[in-house]
Image (cartoon, rainbow, N blue to C red; front, side, top):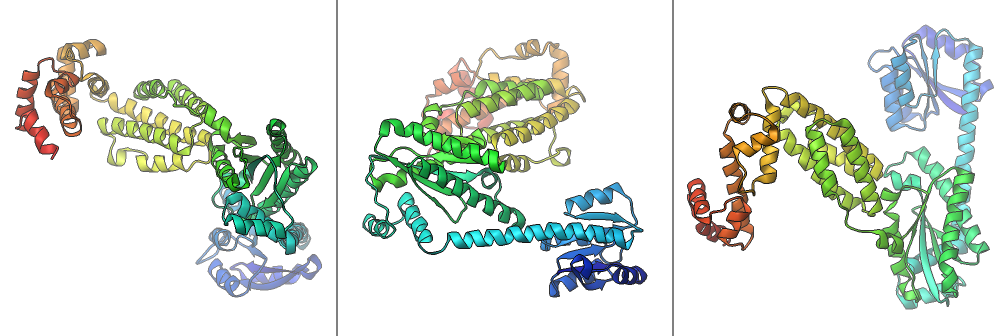
Length: 537
């Protein structure tokens, strides 16, 4: 019998529903009735129930608020809403909180019976599946099988001394004397993509992980290719070995591909497999395991249903040529070119994927893009409340993305957003030209021929009009900005390098080192030599 709680603020309705529904006939016991959501939560805290049948409109805590709290604190409890409101917004919220049925008043006892019967069938099925998981896990962990798995995992991970592990292997009847060994780690994609699973998903995925282990074991045993065990993390570990090294690689690859194919076909689940390198001694099997774990991390780039071989990944891994893409992205964001931004991210994703960047390497590129956008925002006076999201928010969201494509989508959307903001900002008071000019100065300050005329030629605007616009937008003159930037770059070089003064002068756009020294002292109050001595102490 399933326990059900009735919640409604109208006493007549509670009485009518309580008396007219034949609870026991449908497999239920009416545990009690409450006037509002607050009272219901207190009741459930002391008297666990399986189902809550609730109205929406109630004092203190309404039915939707109750559903939300039940979803958070009692996810196993099924919710049925009985309401007089045929409102789409309520229905949407009900779906979000996992409500099983949304029934409109008035409803007959027979109609209620049909709903309860269907819900009971669903709960019966869930309980049966839960019992099956418990039985399977209990059977798997009994006796010799548990010892076998633990011993094999110690060997694979290198977590016990050689002499000790040899004794344990002998106890479980394992004797390895092959020419070559290789470790594969097999993981359901659902675990790779989510750090947090609710209780129902955990139970379901635990059963699926057990199926994955059985399928893997059957395929490996059929090929007489090694040993298989399941870890407490629900991963499957395969220690593959052979005395025929030449054919071994193809055999291993075939086994892994067949595991993926069967899990796709039978269970409709994606699988990730990390494959370590070759070990010739049992003492070095742990190295292959560590490489398999490393390879498995590349699901972030490659996605699910892949056999990720560490040696192949290392061969394909190279430095990505992202500079032209980022330069193009910079121009497209400033120009609010939506198609260009989308193309840039498609190219960047392709480049990072082909160059086999790991999550950390991708994070460095994401950080660069975020910093670039932040500079654009500052330049266009988009700080404080004007900005839609902080760079920390966007960076955190993109870094937490489950795969590369999702991270690219998050950042692409933000670039489009920033592009629109820049466009709206630059079209006010001639800021467009100021933004483009500042960017041009930043990229060309080291050119000694850079001048007001060359900037105006680049922007296709008269010097007089540009000077007025630039002063209005920045509060200073073109030359003040240029000299200020050159001096800042010079100070950085004096602080952090051993370059000569004349070399620094050339680097920051002065073709006369003497004039550079005069300008530097005018700005800082010190000669370049004095500044360098002071800062390099």
